Length: 277
Picture 1 (cartoon, rainbow, N blue to C red):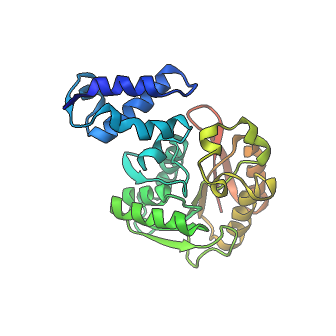
Picture 2: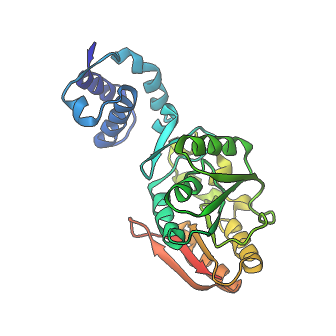
């Protein structure tokens, strides 16, 4: 048996990343709590565990190479639920939780609503909507590896979601969609110089960078198809690159959407677009 607080302190001392001390502490705490099943209070109280500090060394070596802690652990929490994550999918972000919150307001009280999640990745958006509303949800992604993770996450969280493998720019699956939601790739290659090593080195390029160095590529596709395929009253919610939020709004307005509005995230950046057909 070993003292959990001592293990936590050893983990803090072994992480050599050039990050603020509080972030190092948070990574170490997440590592220890996930591996022991204890909460932070129990760890700091020094509860005895079977884990030894040496057991953490292989994981700490990966962390010190800038591999995200979520990939090291193979899981991430999103909206209070656990999701499997691998380098085949993006790590779910708090901003995307905000997107789901917005989308749920559009469907939570509509028992027959149909939702299309474009670029579903780990399935965190589709599954969360499926778990917290009566909507029928379909997730689309071009990556077979990502969809395999999404299917596993649906089973893990008890969600019923239909999965389709296809490009986001291909004709949408047949259906009378009441809500289209998407967090598409929206980063231009020119922005990569400002990105952190743990993102560039480990998260999938396919899910990060827009094709042709065009951050609006997928918004243009969603607006065009939405203008053609969605019935009056159908809604779109997307996550945005704040640098191109106004330009994305112009695209949707040009395709016949109305009530096109931009919303800020918790950091006061224009991060979300809502449009009504």
